Image (cartoon, rainbow, N blue to C red; front, side):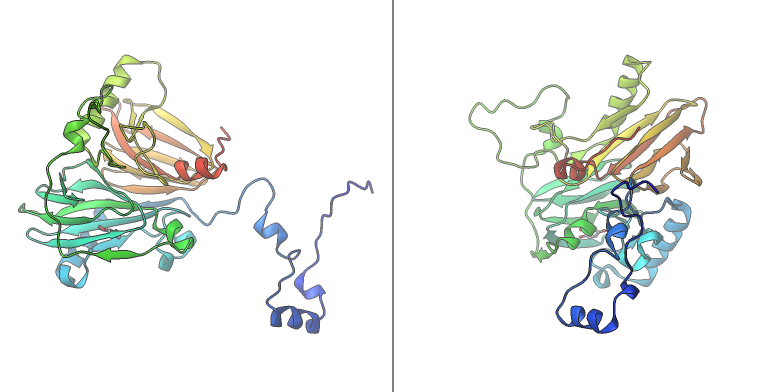
Length: 351
Ligand code: GTQ
């Protein structure tokens, strides 16, 4: 046998005498070698995140039922969490760093003001007349709108309309909780202040000139209307007919960087009939169908995203998306862990 200098079979815990193991335990010590391959597996990380599909039709039924069963005063946030079974449902994780919740607000209800260390966004799924007040900025909620509630900003949700409003919450809660930095604070209410990022940054390519000093807002734009993101995708697709991945990134218009620090947010358009293979990259992703319908293939799993359906794609895994319509584009909201992976220096694109 050739000596490669590698050790193929490492010792097991059971190979050690019981009294030695007991003494290690009594001294809060653990031998590394029985667990070395588990924590540093060869080539591909161990992932608990499983490809998971949450069809909206069922989720909507159960969420409306929660509206009957639990008044807002007993919930504060009336949310059903989209939990990835690979992590264990009780962990309330969609992936290692992402939390997903579907939230219901009924006409006249108020989800009171608070702020917390995890960053959040809302992707509006259904209904009109609700709003989120973020550090005093009133953000109306319409289908497909993206609203930021970044770390430390006060936010509350209200509803002046006549029908239920439902939105998807995406938070980096699992990560912030894991690093033992997750907490919240309450405030009785906020006052509405003038100045809306969506107006100040209304057009791509031009930003307000700081003649008398720059805005001191770390998050100058809080609401990204779907009408604008959709128009950007349609004109990008028209301008660049050869472009394979017609995708835009939601950015901070002052810095051009990701809209939030930990998770990334994107809108993707599939051309009529298009099949797009998303490369295997280290961050996990979440896909939410805004308009149209798409077939998704991930490793051994396949599902069809109908409108408002959501799914999770593990990291280091390619996904193939097919627009089910031959005549209409399909639009997908994507959330991923790229900003986190890039900042930590572990981002990889394996093609
Ligand atoms: O709307 O502020 O899904 O604080 C989880 C935690 C929503 C919210 C969630 C929250 C919120």
